[in-house]
Image (cartoon, rainbow, N blue to C red; front, top):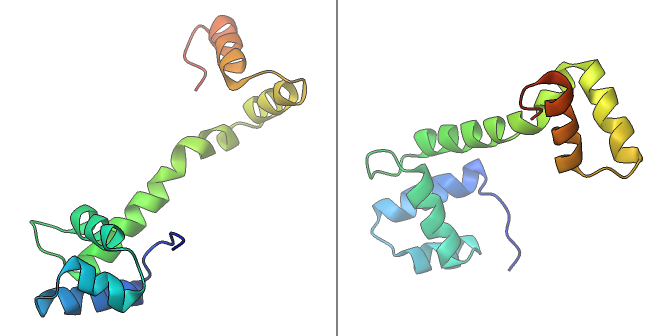
Length: 110
């Protein structure tokens, strides 16, 4: 099976099946997902050890939204974006670029 994120519909189904007392394996079979994926979803997106569709959906949304922030920092400064792009095209590694930024600016380049 190939991993895909849980959709809102799948979270709804998992929530209903969980309330009916089905095991993670049974829920996984019903959703066409591996039981460990079901277990991980329930563990990571439960609130106070209770899996609620709306809270789980919101937690998953927030995680995905903020996971992208670190990679987006560079877009805030065109000067920095151009510098990094130029150095990458010259074959510099991210660590070399970061080191150069620290040396030139006296601060963390990340």
